[in-house]
Image (cartoon, rainbow, N blue to C red; front, side, top):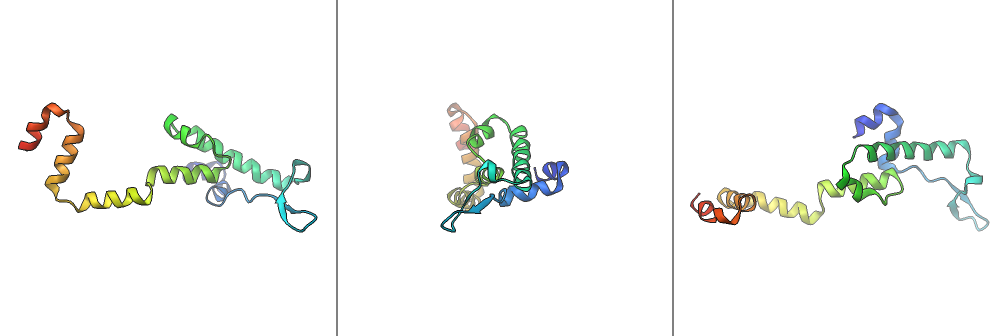
Length: 128
C-alpha cells in the first residue's frame, strides 16, 4: 500500500503513520484548539488535502470486508491503524498463533483436517 501511495505523491505517505498534523491555534486561555475553516491558511488546507488523497487510496484499494472496518475512520492514520490490527491481530491472537506452532505436528495436522473436512470424514481424520 505504501508504494502505491508514494507513487501518487512521495510525501503523501508521511501523514499515514503520523496523521495529518492537526491544525491548531491558541485560544484566549492559551490552550491549543482546532482551527475553524475561517482560521485555516492555505498550508492547513494542503495537509487536509493530503489526508483526503491518502484516504481515497485506502478506500479504493480495499474490498467490502475491509471497507466495513474502516468506514467510520476520519483520517488516514485511523484507517492504517485499524487495518494493522485487523491483519496482524491483537496480542492474544499472536499468542495463540505462537502456541499453534509449539504443539506437535500430528496435532496440528489433525486440527487443520478437522477444520477443513466435514464431520463425516472424522474416522478418516483419526486414521490419518
